[in-house]
Image 1: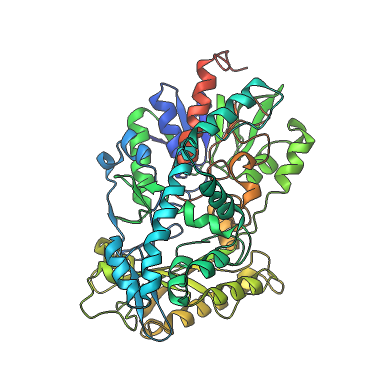
Image 2: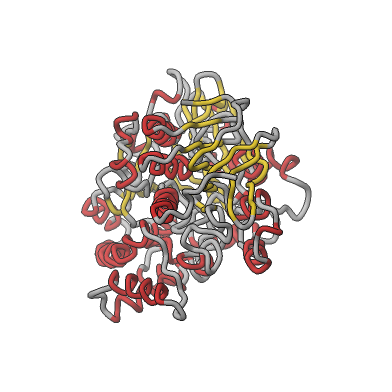
Length: 545
């Protein structure tokens, strides 16, 4: 049930701050275990950054996140999301890159079909593609189990630390020394250097680039960017397929609507337009929350789906946290490098080089990034606070996959854009919003010349808009950059990677916790299970005072 904001104060077993997909996931698992659970969402709708919103009459768009890739199969099945309306169809091709010479290269879901496509460019690279794909998928399978469990507590002075290291070691049983070296290389090396070593064709290299470093700081030649090759091969979707990409029918908001419906059926209460002003802490223990309108709500445990900086620097009084913890949180690298541009068109985009026999689904996904050098140059400009003239644009003609998103004759084009700076060297984002939108349209026009004249509505979401509207500190879509020093037992900060916080009963359940960003549901599920483990030990059973 959804409650109005003026409900009188009540005590709950658990309160979840933020109705994004991880918050809703956590709430559903808590309620399934029998805890009275309330979700508080600051916006008028639930979903966080996983929403479908109308940007013109009858025209709906996935305004922020736009394709489902690593949504955990366990979350889908355990919460019975298909019973609540969730339906996804595979993106096929999963990636498609139009090049300046007019050639459009698809990466088909079927590997043999993809190999044959790539052999038209380079028979040597096509054969190598199969070998690399096998290598990457095998290494990704070693990492898969860590997605749904807390990272190890690296403390060799305690028995628990040794137990955690033993648990991690078991996951790598059977791994060879060569594979260990490969894993270390992927964790620390650059995507560009790996691709230069493996392939000869710039186009084949670009196909791999088009599937990596999304929303992440650093061009493809920056250390640590190779990890995306493994990250995007973790399984996802209803059938647990490695490297799954899916179009969500009804837009990405169908995921969070299904999660909300599943939660409500389990007893979760959801309150929208209910921004939390602060987390109530007494004597080192969480006691509930205070809304911005002054309403106090008591709870034995609180889970925050907000990012770490918003949670610990904005909602918690610094006196209730250790100084070194606050210092570490302040140092989390955010500074989001991406934006979104959403459009309604009165004719379908016509990308030069697309086969006249291509089906609507095959005319849905286009990534506009011609070379690795182009991407590196784009990042170099953005990191100094400038908006690049030439941008990396991911285009999804989502109405081709789901014609319910727009009325007949209208088409939805949603575009993910990088690299752009959160902090501008000159001016501000309110002044530069249209400039960014114009540059995105100009880039698209190089490949689909009919688009500029077909636009009937346009929405530009700058990094500042992502912060103001969707609550993402510094516009970072992952609640903290995905880099080696901010992953695994270092996420969100060293010593606090297992969803607990220095405040007893307060947990972090969003993308700022392990395993990080993307629409996976993993942080929410993991945090809920951690809280339930503590709950079963009787730590929070006393009455709220």
